[in-house]
Image (cartoon, rainbow, N blue to C red):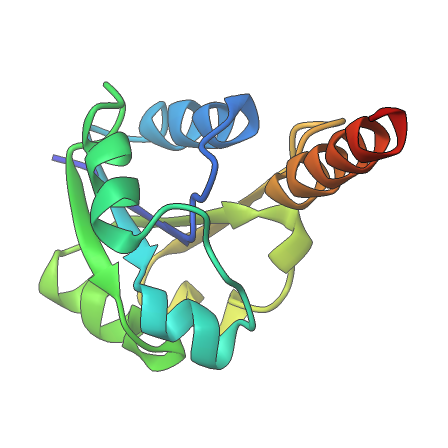
Length: 138
């Protein structure tokens, strides 16, 4: 069985996330998603999520491409996860290109192109703009 792993926050799950998960699953038989915990996001990524960890986990578990969701608690757990879950392929978006090349010692590393015209940051910015426009109209 070929095992794939990817990492992320997956807040405001959107079609860019689904594209990544689908492409990752196409590389093997079993897809593991390491989902950033709330404390990790806030403390180390400077991200505040709309959905908490349990809600984001529940959403990911409902996606047909995902076989297992595990918590991401630190930047340094990746090699441990790869060894523990006997991972064959590590997948990330190409905005991380080169950052995880050191892991080729443990498994294949693939960077997928991001889906154009969509990101969680863009969605949050668009929602702020809509909210500001509504406030001005009132």
